[in-house]
Length: 305
Image (cartoon, rainbow, N blue to C red; front, side):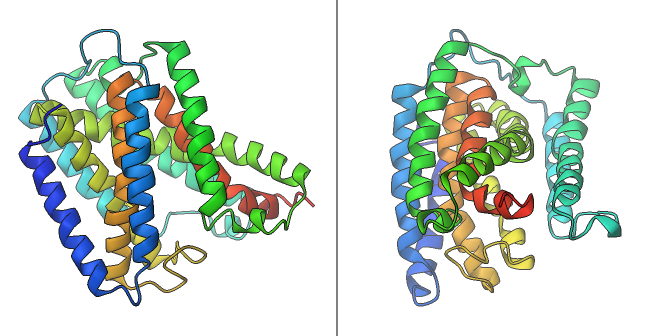
């Protein structure tokens, strides 16, 4: 990999500008939290991927993306950007019902983030399944790497993550935590594992890497988009109510946090995808780590009292 890629340098410039703004806004912005995530997850766990993740035994499956394929990718990305700022369409009777709301949101995400772009690439460009991340490669090595990375990053999330604060304060029993984690993990395999990893790694990172001809540029561009995709939820729907930004973050703080704290997670997951050329390990790790933060939500949602 070459780190002097123009796209990677552009991303570094955006990150540096965001960091300077965060320093200027440090009285209202959780600068220490963002830097900690960058150092631990962005650099530490990205480096661990080189040690733990098995390299794909062969040439990368990603081929050069044609201009028409990239146009489709960018247009679809624009559509997703628009959909992210509007409420998810749910039947009125489902609102307030935990299981039905999760089911509705999950099916909606599965349709727009996975099925539609997958159908477009397969139908118009006959993109191979391997090119989209649906390959096993070194199955045993991937499962072992996913287990170790999930334990390490999940443990980090448990120790310092805002979502796991009720667990650290011992508000729930060990049985509740175990059942809550199991339910959250199974659900996150779909909602964040398959949905987000296919869209941001298999779809976006794969097309960007093929078009740019540079894995570092593809990882950086997809990581930035991965981070920014969370900003509308943080700002418009108070998605960080229990997090570092508080219940009413400004739009600027939501964007800065997305770049400084969330996009570095994309480095780690993006490299894991590139190394293995498979969505399996990223899906498992992403689902496990997010499940730790969602344990209290599932305990309360399905009433595991």
